[in-house]
Amino acid sequence: MGLDSLVLIIISSEVNLTDFIKNICVYSSSSNILPEMYYKVAQELGVLMAKNGFNLVYGGGSVGTMYENAKAMKEFGGEVIGIIPEKLHSIGVANTNCDELIITKCMRTRKDKLDKISDAAIALAGGFGTLEELSEMIVQKQLGYNNKAVVILNTHGFYDNLLKFFEEIIEQNFANQNSRELFFVAQTPEEAINYLKNYSPRHFDIHAKVN
Image (tube, helix red, strand yellow):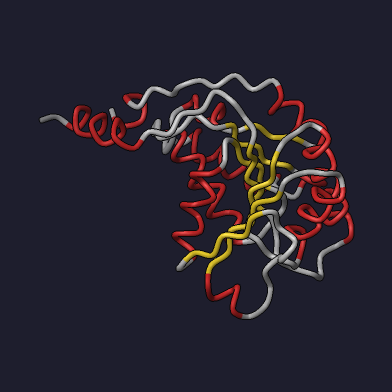
């Protein structure tokens, strides 16, 4: 059996495709000592998500930009689903105002649950956890495991250097040229929401990656 056949068999059993966006997973920060502009953008995104009828799926915390985003959602009538691992729940940083709070065994099971419940993902400015989650969503889409919209919200150029690194990866052929289409870069919450409202799923050719 060739590599192409093996890869396609694995994907066929685990593929998760969506044609309708309702639940948006937002990756963000748990820090309470960021510049104010990051909290403001998180709040603005929450308001727009609620007003446009989207639900929030997020890490379930009561700290940082993640909480500001969730709090704004609730204030404007949006539904909030929080997913938090036992260890973080035990130290009292869970948002008890979630419509649904799911407690997982660990960070990996939390990430899996976030993925399974959500129809799209938005990455706000964040740290290593956000970077890991964003990278995994891009790779899953690249390999055909899902066709979800992935949005990078580039607040005040926060992700400029990361996007330059992505270009370096593509230009040196560590990723296919069409990898630029795996994600969308928004400069404002409004631009992110408009993209999701008009998102048309597409499937990427697995052979372009493995051949």
